[in-house]
Amino acid sequence: MATPPPSSTELSQHAGVLALELDPQHADLAGLPPEPLDVAAASALAGHLAKDLDRILGGVSHLGLILPGALYDQTEILRPGFPLTGALAELYRGSSRAPSFTPQLIALGTDWGFFPVAAINPLRRPGSGPLLLLPFCFVGEMQDIAALARVMEDILLQSGEVSQATREAVQTLFGVTALNLSFATLSDLCALARVHWDGGELARLWELLEHAWFERSGVRSTLLEHGNRFLIAKSDAHTLFYTFDDWAQFGPGRALEAAELANGYRGWARAQRQYALALALYGLHVRWVLANPSLEKALETAQGDKALAAFRAIPCLSGDYLAERIFHNDSEQPERQLQITHQADAELGTLAYTVNALDAAGQLARLEHYYPLQPQGVQAIIDHLIQGCAEQGAGREVLHPGRLLYSETGRSLRAATPEDAPAPPRRAH
Image (cartoon, rainbow, N blue to C red; front, side):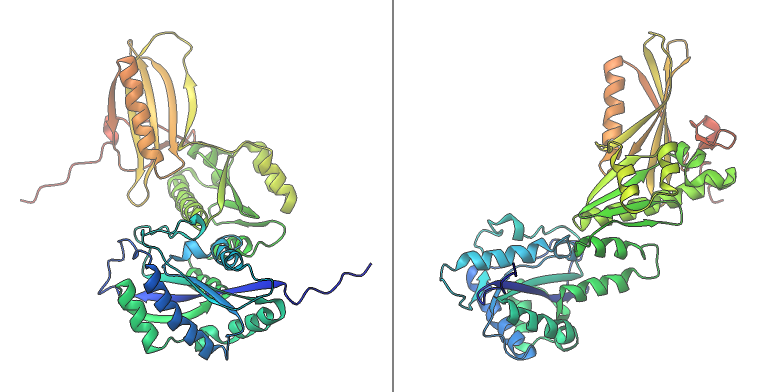
């Protein structure tokens, strides 16, 4: 049976943004973005934007337009499926109970500093500048939106300069000074992100994010220089976590000379943190899996759905940190002293803590390495070790060699000795 053509009243939507590049001379880029506008201010601003868009796009009065009186950073707009602009379209649809489509301009404002609808409430995170975005969404009949989308994608970024009246309204109402204001589509934003990341260590990040943003089918994967592996499926990012010992013994560092392991693992840790943080900021759920030799071997040949199945067969890591137990003495002698080595890098900070637990006779009772999995994991490790000492009445000594310490023969982390302490700075004579 043939499928009937869509009804003329079936609605669709297409979104864009007003991009504000803040002037660093007049803005605290580390501070919070401005609060959302009240209803009156949002309505005034919406009128200016609607006039500009009508002029630039050759007439849009036959379409509905909805926008919030608020500014967002890029990570709030570019998320899998673009949920913020989708929420705007749903709010527009829910605002009208008329049996037929009637175009209207809807401006969302608030007198409380936040919106009651969580999906459109700006996060206002510190350091969101210098680029802030005001999203908007056109709603209309399918054929009209399809025609509008072609025009927006062709000319909005190139011809999307705002009027002087809109510029003044934006800067006055939000209390900001902008170097540039221009309209763009979501596709334009994605392309600009690619230009920003292209050529550096984050060059492949865009490929992963683009796959998630536009909800592409199948699996997108990448393998980075230092062995970092990421698989994207829908809004999930799957990645391997390597302890230093695993990375050096059976992981990506297994072919390196022993003297190169510290630099190699630092490179892996740097890329892992950058990619995992960026993927999470853009709304993906980052699923960490602890590497093991069988999985490592399987992923050498598995691709696509098979690689994804290999990841999903293993429970993901949870919590703020990972405790890797290397040795545990079955003796019931209580621990009396913890010797803690802070395995750190000048650029990356804490990579791990190595813990030697000694009994009353000075014998090794336990050897463990603690790795932070989240930014808050470092403090969680410190709190855990302090609490353990307090519960057992054990003392503790913390050594800060200022670098990664490992055994070249064992290709494994080792505890610091007094000889590993950094030399004190020389005094000028």
